[in-house]
Amino acid sequence: MPTADNAFTTALGLILTLDPALMDIVRLSLQVSLSAVLIAALIGLPLGAALALWAFPGRGMVVVMLNAFMGLPPVVAGLMVYLMLSRAGPLGQLGLLFTPTAMVIAQTVLVLPIVAALARQHIEALLGEYREQLASFGLGRARMMPTLLWDARVALTTVVLAGFGRASAEVGAVLIVGGNIDGVTRVMTTAIALETNRGNLALALGLGLVLLLLVACVNGAAHLLGERARRQMG
Image (cartoon, rainbow, N blue to C red):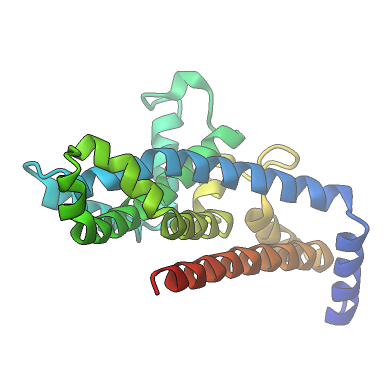
């Protein structure tokens, strides 16, 4: 059994030498998470803005559901996507189960409520501040949406970064729908769990260090954007 010191030294060596196996896992992880966050942002930001701008029957229920789904357990999201993509499911004929596409769908399901709910809160607060000014320009709600989204861009970028942090650190959903197949659907979180069980602590630790660095960079960027937004607001 390798010691912790040896495993840590070997892990650093894997990172510094850009070990192909490690880099393939990191590359797939980034590809899946970035794709999911992009899709969630393209859907969630306009959806959140629409919920802030328009009143309609059942709006309160939609807001409550979005807030509830922010805490959706990953394994439940994975199970939902699995049932949809399995052979007996409505999308089973597409053959997407145990592919990176299925993992993107699962992570999108997890990230979308976070982006939409937080975007609604930011746009609603901004609308309360600028409502009279926008109305004086004769802008309807549809024309207000791009204006408010642009004005809230710094805060919304932080929201998207929070979504990426959620996606990149997720393990349950991608394990269910991806199957953790070597060279096909193995990402950092699932590989860490597998390699730890195998006793391959060096690779598990190397991937863990990369994941920690990635999360730290995301949190750092979110903090800097938040500080910038506070300075702009005076």
